[in-house]
Amino acid sequence: MNDCYFPKDFIQTAEGLVFAVVEQGLEQGKVLCFLRYVQQGTIWRKLDTQEANHFLTEHYPQYLFFSLVKSAALHAVNVQSIVIHHQPRQRLQDLLLKKNLDMIEQDCTALCQMLLVKGVDLQRVGVTGSLLIGAQNINSDIDLVVYGRKKFYQLRGLIKQFIEQGRLQQLSEQDWLESYQRRQCDLSYVDYVWHEQRKYNKALINQRKFDLNLLVLRAEDEGVNYQKKGATLIQATVLNAQYGFDYPARFLIEHEQVSEIVCYTATYTGQAVQGERIEVSGQLEVSSTGQARILVGSSREAVGEYIKVIEI
Image 1 (cartoon, one colour):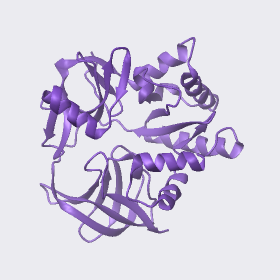
Image 2 (cartoon, helix red, strand yellow):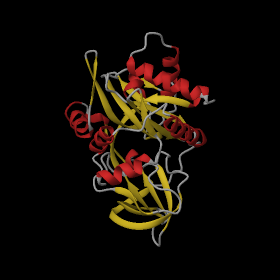
Image 3 (cartoon, helix red, strand yellow):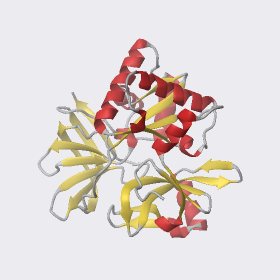
Image 4 (tube, rainbow, N blue to C red):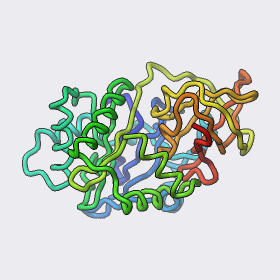
């Protein structure tokens, strides 16, 4: 079994539980993750955060975990308990060779063919979400993972180009509204859509929504621990946004006390560009070396936490 576990991978246990990996590497021999699907007969049932926590508390408390490294309540699975490691890149390659595709698989492969014609190396692209484990249905989205920052920015440029050419479509008003309601974020609807429309990391193919997610693989863990110091609200100027689509997203800022914003929620990925002034609500964290940062996404829903451009 592959020892390397990365965000956007899924891991499956013998009990029919599928967890989404949320952090590269291991902590105490465990993969940090979050329960997403439970197998019921031949059907995969998707769980939201509250359902997942309740389900594990009731049935499998051994997978509940408090990460000292991340200072957060997560789920975690011992490497020995993993029976299947679902890997996005391998799954996409399998899909591209598959016959008898369903509708969502057809849309996924059609999108990939559009990218391939433009010279995109599909070995650097994977598929996560429901498609990764074959749990998709007629209404499922397509979640692509792009491995490498340069490749990701190339694909964003192609998405913008395809929209301008009419080969892909921007999300409709209804699509944006559904996305906004699903995110349950702390921005107004108008603010949410304004920030999202300029990112070019999502669009429609055959009226099906797809997302691009960037994953930059680390050679090794930085090993810096942070302690939470409570909620805070600041305004600052973005000095460097080149890591803004990373997982976690990072924005280096000009501020008297805080040097960077780190974001674990996809809602605020790519939220600002260099030179813009932002308002940030999140958890103040301080490292053992005294470096201060603000964490946005201290919980999966990131209630009360946000990044918002206030001046271009």
